[in-house]
Length: 173
Image (tube, rainbow, N blue to C red; front, side, top):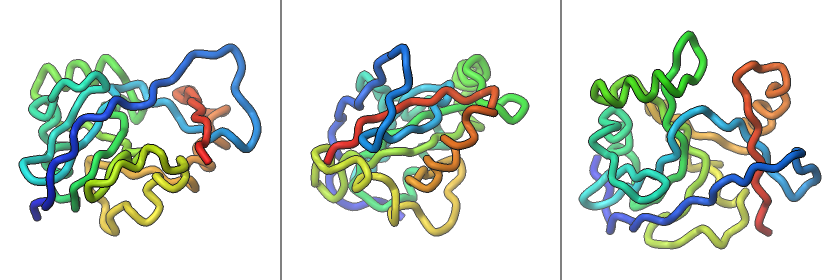
């Protein structure tokens, strides 16, 4: 079904800053940093569009993700990471090769809702923007929605995983 409402404009995502130690305390959310491309999905009339973190339109480079995004209600602007798997693990060179060969077989992990129904949500607290209650009831491969409970699960197992890099985000209250 086509998403109704005006397609949201590109909004620069919050980017990570490299630090020497992992921040601690209740003001931080931690998530796995996948080895992929940061991307934003805009759904709405005339969409979907998939943007790079700098605002380039790469919808044609991610056709499977765009097809799945076309079924989402909108309008909305969703932040996430596009990855490709090799031997069950995210692999950046496999991602680059897949894009060069037509962009099929990719997965996007969606982790933030930046805008919905024409409203800018970026000033809301981080937890209010997570996909709690927003993820579709049925899986939309290749889109995967991450909620706070999944953040906890992946953070607890990150230390034992050879592929995990943990990224922290300061909560906005």
